Image (tube, rainbow, N blue to C red; front, side, top):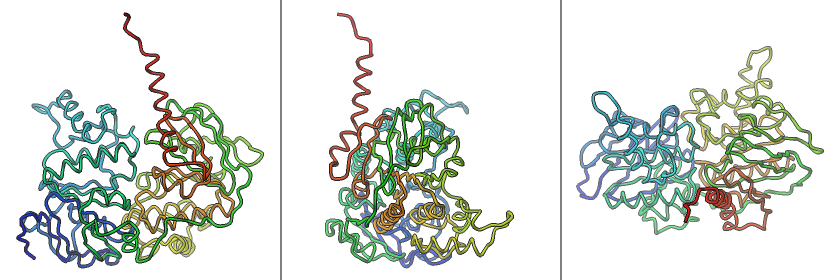
Length: 517
């Protein structure tokens, strides 16, 4: 199909993609110059697959594309980027052993005669980082030393360097603070003024309403609606996405909150986690809120033994018995599970099947004498596929072929096969659509009815307020305050999140030398 409309930048015609089964069918779509087109739908609807085809990371099975009026068939991501089509994916494309500055300009390091000019590199990096609110980060910092949220902002900054005609943002705010989100939205507005077209993939419907002019809704690989964003409210969009109505309320069911199951006292590690103490009871969901860098993930890693604490104790049961946890093996042995925020790097074997990934933490159940029973492994995986509503062709499908949300379900499903009394969830619904989120909320409720103690870290305050019995707020590594259900407000939680930094800055100002009169 040929498009002559001058403001049309990209045309997608009859695009389809088949892996083990069709994931996209007959997609027709246009992208206009300087517009933000929201692309949304449930996990497995085909959003990421479509964006990867546009970004040169996947080849369509059927259909064709035009870019700036010419046939567009990118053979690789590099080829697409060379033409000005950039993509910021959920899976970060950064090298952790290189600095922020080196990652930003890896393909175009400044220098002469093969020698890198560190001065020019640092100067250019500072400019690029300032555009996305990373002013406080040293450009020479290794990317591997940054949290996931800051790494996401580095990835966004990298893709904004140079000429960019089309920018694809796949769940760009999933790990960002409110301030960083605002910085991103400001940058999007600047890009639109420059004529850059943006495909914005997100499950956060309130964000789409703020930044998008049109919305395209995918369901089960089909394009079900393309309309002006102003025509729909959040409830109507959810109905389009999932094919059924969802109400933002969850009944956790009849359950009993009992005696303490997990008691943390004085847990500390350098300046990341500072003298943190709290307890979680059986049948309770204890939420942990805070800004990126507040120490939320670091705290869970200390409890799980992934990092070693400088001081403090972890105790289980009632009366509390202090346990020695020097490694994750120790934690699992004591009945503690951690569902990590980094499912790609720490939670999954992407080149293996669903059954192999779920079996990974449950070998004693499916093996004898070191030999795995394939039937038992298959049955175990199928049980979790059914229970978690994992969209797949079956237990044998590779995890790398699943959508991000379904990959997360595989991680959770593995731990549910173990009888752990304490479960630590770090961003359990990151990159997961509205319908799947409520599936996981219901699952958390079922776990509490079984008497499990749950700790949930989330960047989404509304999520924590929806599912938690209590919420503790970390700020600058310290547990500032703990709120009971029905006694918190979003403003109170945000104020507590900033309080530790304000106190820290005040102490620094007091300690700073002053000029004599």
